[in-house]
Image (cartoon, rainbow, N blue to C red; front, top):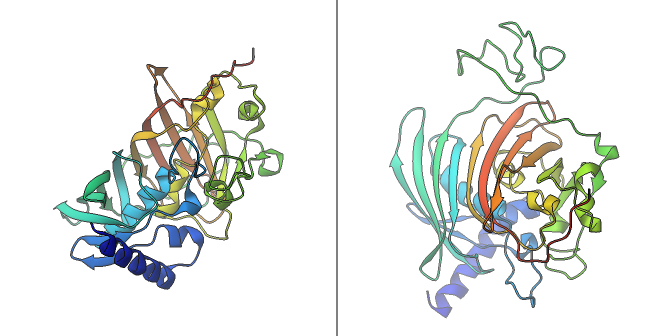
Length: 330
């Protein structure tokens, strides 16, 4: 891709974003159709995580990149929701125009599968396989408690037995227990984003209210458990949808911070399942790890909506950050 092509792509990306956007998140994930299965995108520094001029190039949050690719896939899908998304991050995306190529591997009445590749300078940066389908909308719980003993008409996951789209057995494990949002710690802007004081970049675009029990790493006193949990929303007023779920599953600080790890922890592979269309309001995200060794760690995340329903799940494999290791508290 030559210089003139880059400039042309940038102009088209900025024009397309301006026409289609509503919030910074919508602008940052906007795509412009170039032709059949080809889209223009532009990784946005407003969701970058590392300050320019440092040892590491600015890296856009992986969830934002996934949401951008999903916009392209859903634009040409006959089915409305990304029910299963598996992504490999091959290179760090530059803050420059990119192309997304979408190829459909299968189309059907209830499921369709596409391969989507985000490309810069003719090199794949992100490779995704996305299966689209239809999931029901979240509904308020119809019974009290955690669903134990729920009847055929009262489901533990808050749905209705009359939902013909999902007949048969239904069961959901208990939701994570967190303090109220008012009792949680507002992570706020933090250093390490685009601006040295942390007021720009990813930290300036999201609202994270963390359970105080998992915030010791901020003060050099990690708890000794690879867990993160808290409430998530965008800084701007925007209700959650499928694209925001892609951001939510990768929204929290890396779980290995709880073990004393520091530094950028790049995701290598992430798989997300969308279970329901989320209800309006704050999302609850809980993440944990099962194993860390050899510089690798896994991270499993669940996303619950304001109605108390499980709306998304994910599992990712990532590299432990290269920053200094801090001793966990006893």
